[in-house]
Image 1: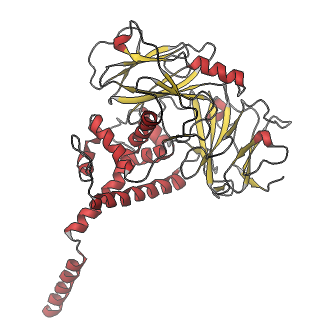
Image 2 (image 1 turned 180 degrees about the vertical axis):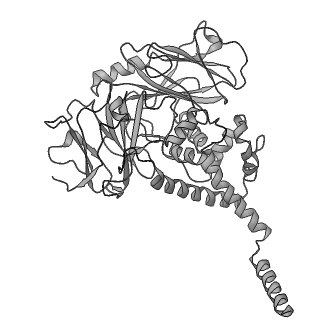
Length: 469
């Protein structure tokens, strides 16, 4: 018996020794594992940095100015799930060298703004416009740098940021897509102002840079460049208390404050493996983890209710920090909203009524019921499923209630068609798709009303249909 036990122990020891990792393998596995976590945790900041770098490298725009698109967005704008039915403006702010920065929003007279002001981590500081803190009266939003202690002058809406960088996404609403209404919306938008508080007594003229013809590509790059973006943020911004646990994991990847990010070829290979696994993890969670808005529906909340709750609390809840949900959300979208559901509400769908992925070679129909519960407008937009950006090389990306020639049915409902070819007689209601790529859709409701939230108005799922030419 004793010999048998001894032999078993020796065999177990040999098996354990044989299964042990070498020191080199342990290092490699640790880097890859931590790279995956860095992708999930860091994606909101990388998302921000990619947009900032596109502005700095592809346009004449600079921080504390305004980058804008002088016509509704088309596929040249490759940000994540943007709205092609508004005039877009972005003001990247930086308080490190100039101190507090003013974002001045005009009163909603002759136009209106739906605006969202965020920090580097895309955490909402405040909303602007009729659904924001100024309630359409106009206001001077004052972005304060981390640790700001001076008294804020009267007449400002103070926004205490915990990062130096940040941006405001400002959408100038359109009455329609006519040339006259587009011009009016742009003219109103150019009343926005951005300037340092130190120059408030005599503000300089705000510089506007038009990016309408620029291929502005801030889609997430799941390669080594992801970590270069993350390193830029780490080097420039202060560590937030809630994120200090990431200091050592990032150092093991070669990202450390005050040091140059220069991974060896071996580490670069491990980072590449980690970022690709991170991409797969995010894609799977996106595909299976969206939360339905209606029971037994393919329409989902664009942002998880749990994430929205935590974000609106400034990620300062004592027992919650939904990094995983945040990572998924910023893999397909950007910007944070302080008051979700007041100025706008989004529904997203990645599968048809039968539960199948949307295929660009097929034709689909969305029957939008009459009396859509909005005070402004509604729209349906198609995006590339892989990149979450507008589908490249398409003549248009959406249809909205702003479209003058949109055909309505006798009962007031509207049928929207998506597919590679316009159905006969349905060109005005058609959104083109790329037959070689999958897609996803987002339904936007601007200034939504009670019937949306009590669900007395229900948006049906998209049906796959046979194309009629």
